[in-house]
Length: 355
Image (cartoon, rainbow, N blue to C red; front, side, top):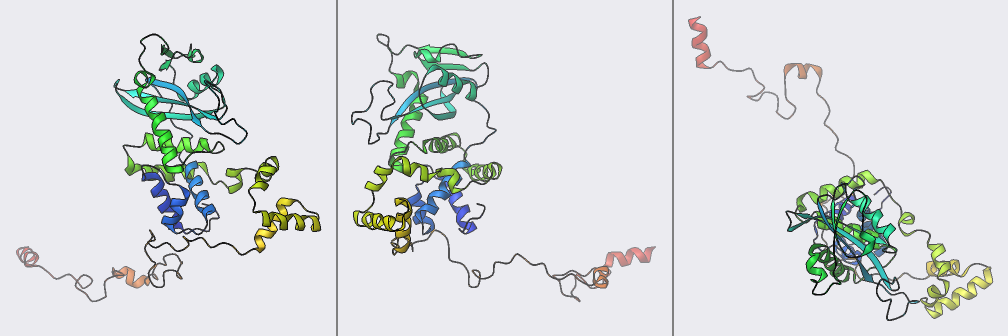
């Protein structure tokens, strides 16, 4: 949150909602709850918090681990409508998942990662990075899983005659895939290829802490201090390069009247069309977002004078040395029963008389 313009309490409330909300939260939903004016600011806030959902020193999986791969549909405009078949990467994002099996019946921690292709080299690297030595890996009959180094392997041939379905043999890893796809469609209405890794990390964070909501906020804040700050450019990358690579596609999304003005402006000043669009958009009257003033803000109103007084707590002036030597307390007026000389009790008087 270095250099942020948002109030600190909105950061803490956003972190609390992200850590304890079961289904996660989209940037549009967070914008309405916190009363943030800009959607871009809400989106950046969420992505910075998602960066703090991965512990760089987390322990690998151990014991018995189920592992499998799946694909999430995602079709670009250049891909065929029907998509690829089998293990084709056309119109798909390939994910590899692994989950611990505790007491032979219950799921423990899990890992989920996007890969470019599910070949032997990629899957064996995933096993080496996310499991300890001696772990028993349970997979289907895909040959890329065979002979993992320093691990035990048990394969189920799901293509055999009368074989059980995959979601029964590998129950929990398929349950994870099902929950992830439903979560992505329900909360975000689908994922995009560019940021799918960080959404996988968010899902892993929620799954691994589904029984300990009371410590999720502490974990999120501690990991945020450990990984350090990150900027907008570090998250979205070089947008200028992306615009040039998708020049025709980007210009088709611009309003025709604005595009015509930008072309004339670029021709008169000898500049790039994207620079001309930025100048024209800057001069136009900005559209006021209808959620600028939410009907029921999540944060309580500030007390009178609180918005102007941002100084730190100032300690009261110290007492004089003579008053300190006398034993007077700061918050008790001088002359009270606590600061006056102690009266002799009857017991003390009898004790002195007998002496």
